[in-house]
Image (tube, rainbow, N blue to C red):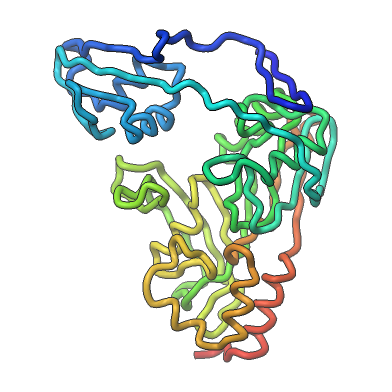
Length: 343
């Protein structure tokens, strides 16, 4: 399949699954398929759709079993009728925007960008303009199309509130090779974080399953084995700072919100993280200047400081680093000068 970018739209040349006129398909559960979860059943019947896409369609009410909306965990019975409706794609007119980029490295196959906190990586709900993708479309002649219409060139993401390094593929060849390295866990990713609380150990490994929070669909959570994907985070304490800890986190896996979820699960949420901050952290900001500096982060105190990978064409090992954003540096400086570092 070939893809291209024009000044007005993202275009795709190639085939796509053919649907009925109303985009609805009906399936009858066979005896061999009885007992399958409905999301697993649909993944087998519609291999052109990802498991996460199917789960989203189930949550949106686009899937029915015997005329009722099922849960993704619903186990099917033989002879049941399952309907699936795939809504037509919403027209998306991605236009390049002259948003400044901090480019650390660039060649014909990829570029490494130092993303500021507050910048959303790709278009989504509530963010149809002003994203990193819009900036890339303005800067790059080509971008890989493997990520789809909304994510051209995007190999991996950083959360809106996280600053730091990420690699962007300008060719499909580079995208495939970089994705393979991520899957093989050979990409080095080191983050710097400021968290609430004092960690009892200088270093350690957090290994849990992470999945969608069953109570809050926009959040992730540590889940029982079998209900999430394995996530591994190594951490090293760099500096205790009174009621806070400055640390380094190294990813072995790359689950959504992984570092934030893992640290919050242990009781040490990242400073500025409104999603996973938990209870009892408001008292840490009685000092008005500290509160002001934390708000100035434009996100949370998490920075992707180091990124290392093998160049997909030359085979050379590349490693890049990005300094802490000034707002993060000012917050650390204030803690060092104003808060006792020994309990």
